[in-house]
Image (cartoon, rainbow, N blue to C red; front, side, top):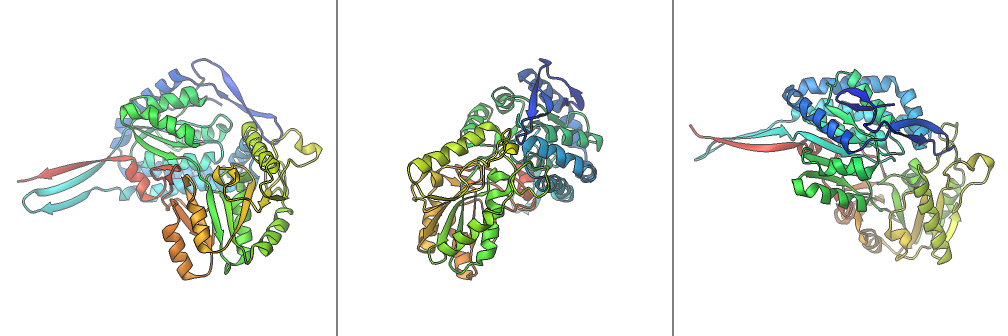
Amino acid sequence: MKMMIGGERRDSVSGRVFPVHNPATGDVVGEAPLGGEDDVLAAIEAAGEAFPDWAAKSPRDRAKILFFAAEEVRRRNTDLAALLTAEQGKPIREAVDEINGFANILEYYHALSAGLRGEFANLKGYGRVTVRRRPLGICGAIIPWNMPAIIMGWKIGAALAAGNTMVLKPARTAPLTCMRLAEILGEAGLPPGVLNVVTGPGETVGREIARNPGVRKVSFTGEVGTGRQVALDAAPAMKRLTLELGGSDPMIVCDDADIGAAVEGVIRGRYYNCGQVCTAVKRLYVSDSIADEFVRRLTARVETFVVGNGMDRGVGMGPLNNRAGLNRVVNIVDAARERDEGKIVAGGRAPEGEQYKRGLFFLPTLITGVPHDSVLFSEEIFGPVLPIAAVSGLDEALELANNSRYGLGASVWTRNADTIARATEELEAGIVWVNQHLRIPPEVPFGGTKASGIGRENGSRALEEYTEEKAVLVRL
């Protein structure tokens, strides 16, 4: 598969490619061009040439293309989902949902784009005031491997609907689905050069996108350290930034919660996509009066999980996406075991069996009685490991939940209206769920506080972040 630059499928300037592996089997499932700085420069040039005409189109005409692309994505859902599972590892049912989610996002911005309007007022003594919104120009997007289709949708949907052109870099371990989606957008009528996909390493492709002065805004999703570097690279050109830098989401289960619903909330919130989700449940605080029963029921549920190749029927959780991620999970669990930080009541190791030897598998893991100062609570575990602590009540739960450098998401499980009001007010997070976790429809602004980043994606706010305001005062 070739890069999309200026509407054409191209090899990289170097002519080199890199393999993409299936994390469940180790097999090569495709190749992508090994792009570099010259490829980014070509993409920026193509985006610059395409910008004036694309920005001049009416919002309705731009939106129609997004809608037609969404229809075609839905029509090809089966093939796209299979490709996503092959390169990323998630169960096929999750891949189907993600591809549908990409289409949902395009449809949302199709519906929303006509609402991108300026402001008008008559101010006595100043005359008529108009605040106009104009697209920024060329925008850059750097996306991760965990939810490539959804996150691509978040970044291109608002940017293109607002009239910008874009250079997008997928992750090296999951570029194929993004490249295919870009081709579908082209087939749906997206003009050449409006969306350019450059594959390759972050230290060359990503850094050139971040620091090139021709790019007016960069949207990055990834880990904190890389996000800081993106901000530093973008600073000299005073670029707009959206940074979504991960989280360590707490889940608080109060003593009046529906235990069955909360257990299922943990299952989806922690083990969806093998725990490789920024807003996954990563810290669990349970009221001590129900902790024993909750852990018992949760452990029984976790032990029913089927781990395996995402293409196989009945699989509840696939492999981790890459070797570095697996190694980090193994090291964190082994270190906790050596320090005697809690009790592993489920998982804690790779599954046994011939079918797992070539893949990057780790069992869904529960660790109870974890000390509050454990690294299991302080660091983001990007994998299927959940530390659990019993708490005396809401005061302690909120204090522990907020005692983190992260502030992306959080959830509280309760039937008490006063508890809901207090928790949603005091939890330091960009998004708070009540009696649910993880679900983020395209209508809802998404982003974090503290080290979890700056800016927002989704919703009408995202459209505004891809525009520039110009105030005009007219006095006759």
